[in-house]
Length: 280
Image 1: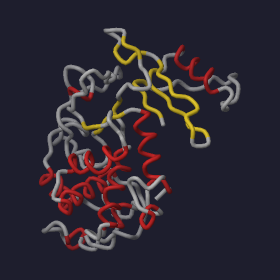
Image 2: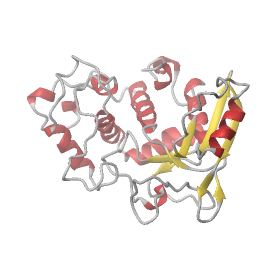
Image 3: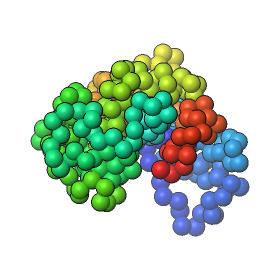
Image 4: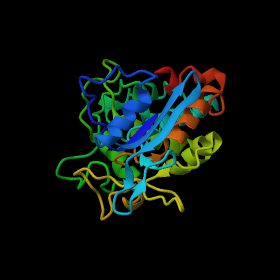
């Protein structure tokens, strides 16, 4: 697992091959070349390396460590997948249910779209729900769940559901909304109580959440949101990315998540074969 505040530079052509034996030296060289982030490497089920590189906060000269909190990109897709499979195991949903079973008003071209289509890339929905010229930012612009579902109703499909396979963050947002409808909890509360807490992920949460005493990395690329470019200051997670992004965490917590899926803490045997850890 890895998280970074700035991209790792390309490996020099004359550098030795990247192996377990050269990994530490390669990462130290990457740091010298400008890489900033945290890296956790696991070998045969055991932590081989867990280190921070560069600075999490340049102004205050705070270094990255294995406990530094970063934005997690699209990793929350795995959390949403686990939530759907937990609810499947509890008999609260069926993967062959059409989306119309959970939300009214879906037009004819989408009524056959199922939860299985949504979770396997076969929904036909575009990759992202943001609309150019409408949303101030494709990740952080304010959008409620109702507004998000209305966008799903009106979205132009890339193909008829079930006839192709193209990854869609949009689809995972719809599944996050299904989690709310089925569980009666907000997506944030469900994920916190049924995924993060059982896995022991104490440094994982959502945009806008504060972690007293912890270091949350500041980003230094051109793209920014808010006066301070750090998830603590980005406001609450928007439904533009709910279920497929909008969260923060550490490399150690990502390892705990993987372990909790594999050892049955989060998913029982009867549904674990459908889990994101098995490449679904």
